[in-house]
Image (cartoon, rainbow, N blue to C red; front, side):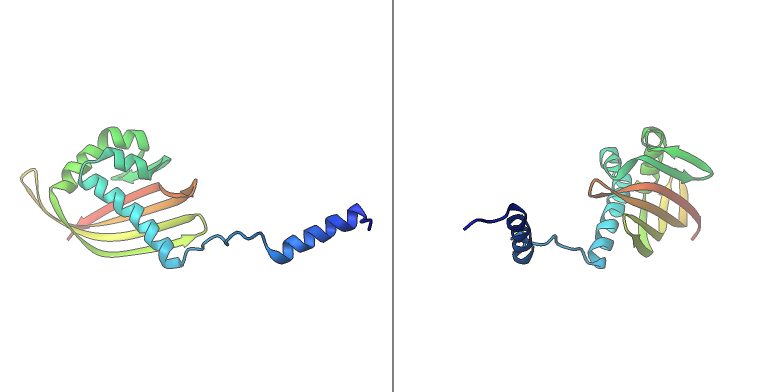
Length: 156
């Protein structure tokens, strides 16, 4: 029996399509899983500041991150070499009570807006304030990285 190469090729393609490749489909993440993964990165960043861990902070910040606070804009290197240390000293001396947190995700971009109450004593000053943090994250090479940080605060 002689097969025409074109017919044989088409038959193999159809057979492969009908039977599937045998590989399991890619697992899909639920919205709750995605929100949890975004929050985990945001929480790691907060923990890095509270524990003065610049290595952890660097691992979750995108190389091109912009950090906005108090009218200033800093790059990743500027923040980690200077302002990070004063933030760590400040945050590390206070208690933090989360008030609210919301995560939104659109494809490979996510943002988390959170409010916290900070209380305690820093450099002989009583602190009672509400802090608002907006983090924008981008999925880069399969991992969420923080691409923008904005902090503002007011009296508690």
